[in-house]
Image (tube, rainbow, N blue to C red; front, top):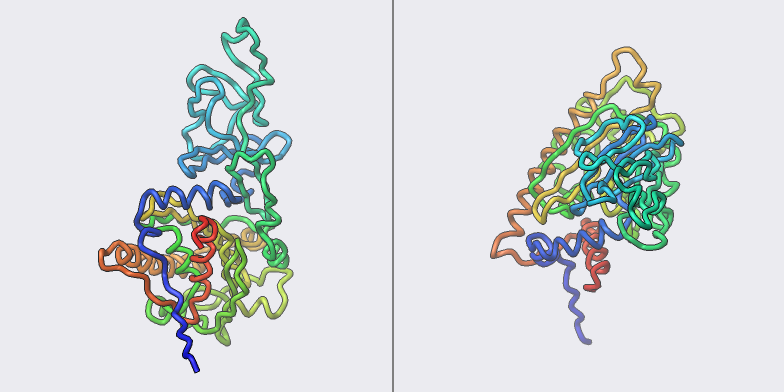
Length: 369
């Protein structure tokens, strides 16, 4: 009888982590042709509030209009292309005005003032609104689509089974309690892959291992835009803090099973969700270069908890800041290893299926399967 040899699944070739041209193509596919999470609605709670986001060499203004609708404008004046705004966040006082020639736009993007254009033949104000990027909201998370399609794809379809998976956490009701920004010298995919396995936890995260059994991971089948699963808490542990205890109440709506687990999901291309019994952590991933990534980590709590005297987010933030920095350090070590001239693809274990799934999704997106 013929013996069939099955080769193990392996990591990707080096160019996926150290080639600038490949990086540009890859990020254009993933961040330019999919819905990308750019933050939370509570960043801009009032009309006129805005945040500026930088992605794929694009500058974007995410603005809440007088009608309460959130829109995303390309940060470029329709006159001569000048950037309209340099501040990272703030409030427009009734209008958006170009600092160069004072072309002025409403917070809904309509051109309302164009000095010296009144005698220009064929010029009509209504023909020159700000260019918009489609914007949608899911569970309080803001998503923007940068593609220039006549009709953008469905965010609902991209979310797939994730669309209603976290209904019980009522994330749209949660509010920001803490934000930490990290600059990591590693490829964006390494951040997601590190997030998607815990085989490293006993060695890298001794504090985490005291709270959650590292082999308790129960992963869902991977989807085109989703990787993830849940891990259980040790007996007597209430949540993920340095002590495993907290005075916060469980989030309303959670069932008994959800109160005993932490759920870790990557919504591709750039939103990592970590839902706990008493709070939710979101990570948005912002690629800056083939070997550099910015990660914005935010802690969200129920408004009733935020109002309580003596509320603090520091017990959760201290634990995850320690854990995150450990993760970012080993991710940077991985990046350096991929850049070695000696690197060749290595084998995945049977417990690293989500990592291989991400590789498979990346290569399929680029037509390399």
